[in-house]
Image 1 (cartoon, helix red, strand yellow):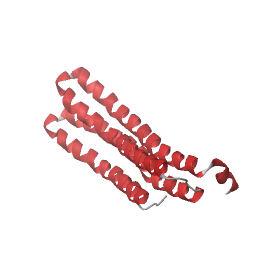
Image 2 (cartoon, helix red, strand yellow):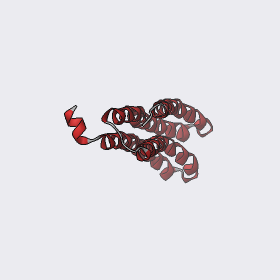
Image 3 (cartoon, one colour):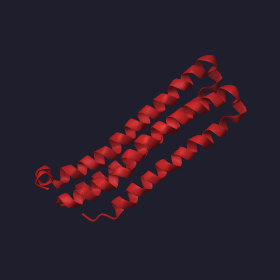
Amino acid sequence: MEFLNAIGGYALGLLGAGLAGFLACIGSAKGTGIAGEAGAGLVSEDPGKFGKVMILQVIPGTQGLYGFVIWFLAFSKLSAAASVSVEQALQVMMACLPIAFGGLLSAISQGKVAAASVNILAKKPDDWSKGMILCITVEFYAILSLLASFMMLNSITL
């Protein structure tokens, strides 16, 4: 506990907020990259499918947005407080972890599903919406992570 006191409450809280934004954005960057690589191959063969490919590529980017929302809420909560104890900061940090890790892992997984959905678009263009549904299934878990972090943050009084 002495080590945590030396770091300070505010800094620990900022670490949690930073993890929410940083890890979710890393996942989104990786996920959109995976989908973009698959999409670029299809677009090079059939440029007319660019719009649908772009939609599939963008989907894994939502986790980065969710992480940013939690970062903003945590940062606002910490900034508004006169002082932040180590215990309060650890609460903020723990509240940020669901979207940090949920966003990271679901965005990468969703990028893989989106890349597979590009294959559906390539082979059966009329069925591309089935790939969207598969992507939305993964999105559900990112939304649950966002809600968990949001509800936990809102329950903390600083």
